[in-house]
Amino acid sequence: MDERHPLIGLSTTELRSALAAAGVPEKAAPMRARQLWNWIYVHGARDFGAMSNLAKEFRALSADTFSLARPEIVSEQISNDGTRKWLLRSGGQEFETVFIPEPGRGTLCVSSQVGCTLNCRFCHTGTQRLVRNLTPGEIVGQVMVARDRLSDWPSTGESRRLTNVVMMGMGEPLYNFDNVKAALAIVADGDGLALSKRRITLSTAGVVPMIPRAGAEIGSALAISLHAVRDEVRDVLVPLNKKYPLAQLLGACRAYPGLSNARRITFEYVMLKGVNDSLAEARELVRLIAGIPAKINLIPFNPWPGAPHECSDWAQIEKFAEIVNRAGYASPVRTPRGRDIMAACGQLKSESLKQRASERMAEFRSAELVRMPS
Ligand code: SAH
Image (cartoon, rainbow, N blue to C red; front, side, top):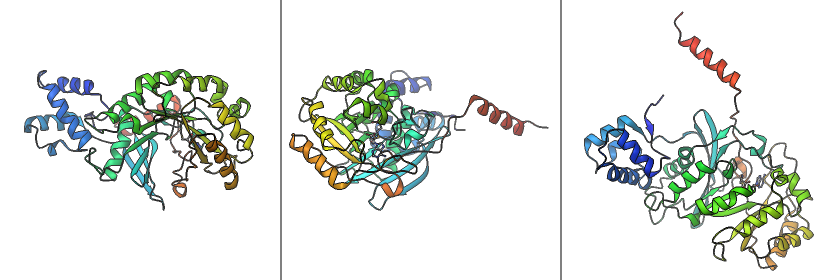
């Protein structure tokens, strides 16, 4: 066990306190914190020894006291379309992160939880029960790992590969609000990872009471997993709708701060054959979002073993898209990326299970037995 204090994921204030606690004089702490921040988040330093502009004693103290460890990479898969998926492990649990390269940009799809509570019918992650929330360090750590593997340091480079972050991996980010907020503040910090809030999109299945807080306190772009235009259908596809029905959800969207044509809400709509893909539903969609600056991402359903749905026919997707588009909304049909490595939207899942307290106890006891001299 590494007993050193992890620095990745600490806010600047927390970093200063950690330095003070390690004995760095109060006057020097703010400057030391700034220097460390720059090494960690601009240069991706993994080793205090390499921080050449810091005094030797301070480097030695830091190396003894602090850790720059990222989540461990369990596996890396590369799709034939260039998409990369990493299975990461931290604190004994596993979660996935996906990098999607596109011409002129690269998007990292970041997880916020191990597993998920929401059970959306068409989503593979929904078949994995919630194990736990990820910490700020584990969320920021996904960006660090991606930049390490892509050789994408410094983060401020002109031709950096990772340009956007979407909170669209495993989990519901608004059910892990505090940790997601803390992590995104670090990701967006202009003196560090420097991905501006406009390049960060948080996607929610519709945790309505948290949407105003997301707008006020996180301030990223917002995406809504809409997927249906009538409550009867959405209740089945996204069971959270029973708690927060469409009228409430769209009300929260209308009130989201800072919306304009340049800052639109993205509505995600998974195309499920015979379930939500009729042209009448396309027209209803347009009525429903009237007045909201919006873009509609039509996502062809990505299959997974045992999934209860099929993807709509391509011709139907195109007709649906045309109706939305004619009404004045951008309605790109998302090209599925990374399907061959189960990295596409809604395909992520890990083997981690929530242990019952009794199981944890049993493991603890057997470990004790091993350690105890007979
Ligand atoms: N909790 C977040 C997760 C985002 S996942 C949220 O609900 O917004 C990114 C998008 O992929 C979501 O809109 C999600 O509903 C959608 N999705 C899930 N499973 C899918 C699948 N099998 N095929 C296509 N899209 C899927």
